[in-house]
Image (cartoon, rainbow over the protein chains, first blue to last red):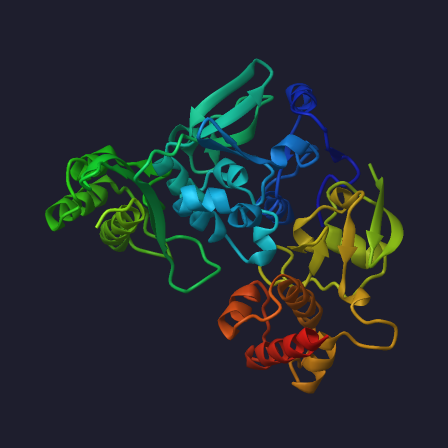
Length: 293
Length: 157
């Protein structure tokens, strides 16, 4: 039985402006509803008791995936399933789309969103390391206007975000896709489907004509309180053609960045070791996708 | 505060009243009387409450009843055409793809959604597509075979 029955309010504004106005003056426990695959579970479990639910899915613009100045804009209400059926997005950012499509079953895919995945602020969120590796930004709408935050700065602790009163994430923006670039996301789970990452790695890189890495971003999931952007790991492979020595240094930098917990899904030692393995494999995949040989 | 929700369920215009925090699953069962929609877990893990919402397969436990305003819903109750069962229902019976039956409406709806997008799925594709539906009785093999067989019948039209 849900508590507070009869007192909860549900609103579904049709514009961002209206949503911000409602959120800004709301009192009590206020929750933004996109796909609902986290929020409804938390309500069912009694972890949250909303006074107000603001459904953003009636804002038409938030259902769009559009190409702007060579980059992509993904609305906060776009389901992960519809990301998967967007061929242009999949071609440009296969790592991000694969990460988004790893979340849950077909039933969940039809509802869940990457903006919601990010707002849930789990260190094990599948789409977040891929977004961090891509250099994606969250576009936030609020009472003081709009602001953009790099995805790696969005979550501040498990379950905590940088969102302020009255703000919500309107869309995710992916930067312009350069030639000879590729991304990849890999996770470890003890089964083939329907599980939460024990360790995960997202990598995005760009090559020059000779196959030398000119730019890279490396992100790790589920090995720290928030998803990590590991600059030393990127540094280890920039300027190389991803030879064995570079891969070893990449793995070592990743293991070194880990600050994981022990839990029923994996030990500290396991996570530290597997972070290196996954980062190396994801780097190879991203390198191949970028056209490297 | 309870809200009036206007929907189309299995092609019939249906209105119901529900609380804002009430899952669509509860509204369908308790307000509309469609008890083919089952509650297994209530948290999106088991798929027993699967429905098709505006053409998309979803767990009705992870949708609020009020979100269904203006939406079209398909449940297991709408699969048979009068006394004629849907090919998936016929093949589930023929292959004994159910025992206790509580997961069956969810499997039927998920399989229907799969075959609409992919009329000739491989065994692997069927297993992935139905990974969001749990069955404690059959061990899944009979379900997979029933779906393959139904797909064959449906392809012949």
